[in-house]
Image (tube, rainbow, N blue to C red; front, side, top):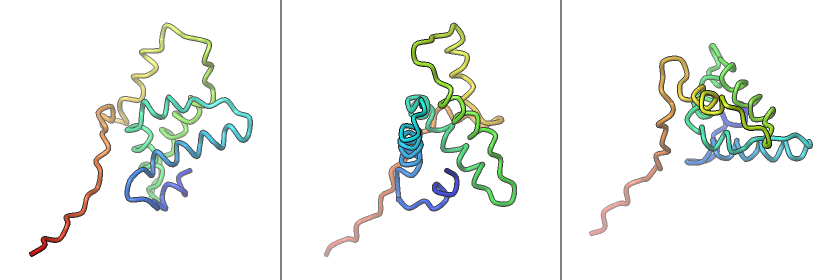
Length: 113
């Protein structure tokens, strides 16, 4: 996933593309996959990909956490710790990723005389 994300082929939507790819890959291999978890925690997913993509010292632990949680999802079981579980995706270290917001990239149009 990290190598595909590192290519960064699109101006926008690379993290969304990776999450859809993971979902389709899991479905193709008959694995249950909680794509909603990734959608709800896009900031955590994106920053996990960033940390895992650092060539000098990659840290894949956060990415492995959210992917393994997405793969071990059981839709019919609601635990009383669901709110607590979702809080584990609010930060990476001391960095708060819960307020992540995609910022579209725009180029300025040349002025026409």
